[in-house]
Image (cartoon, rainbow, N blue to C red; front, side, top):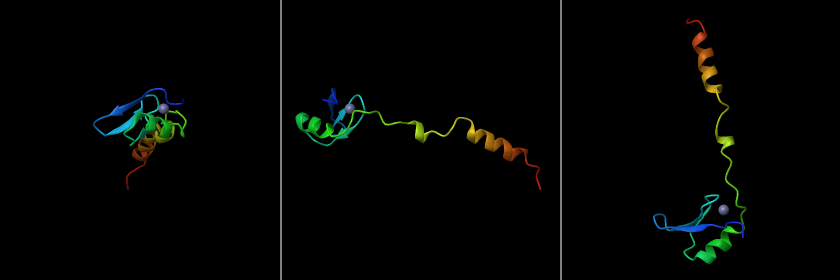
Length: 69
Ligand SMILES: [Zn+2]
């Protein structure tokens, strides 16, 4: 079993894997695990969403260095 710790989230009325955060709207725990089994238990990478550190700051600094007018 890929997702070893699947729990019920009563607030959203869905089962979710504690390890990877993947959710399924199945009410039945066995069915939920079966559905989740089709996917690997991998935490989604957050690296792609985060821009390189300092990139934005450097750009703003260069802009402010430009002479006005
Ligand atoms: Zn998982």
